[in-house]
Image (cartoon, rainbow, N blue to C red; front, side, top):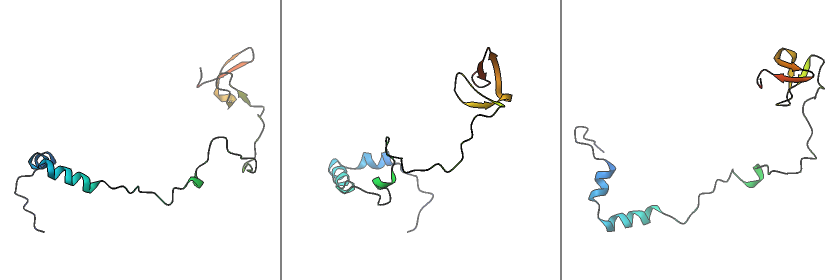
Length: 99
């Protein structure tokens, strides 16, 4: 189909303003359908529900206990290296992020 690039462009607002009410109703009924699009790949089996039974799962990494050069922040309760220590007020350790 040939396109005349020199012709003035029309916006959708111009086209809608010229359409009759009957044409708009007919066009609206054509575009709506009662069929719901369902993605076959997105089934309920792929989703983890909160409170799901994970007793059969195993950890895939080794958890190490807190090392001698680490501390637990008293505000965020994360284990940090000593280099991240901001305050030490009588055994109350605070990391740099919380300080």
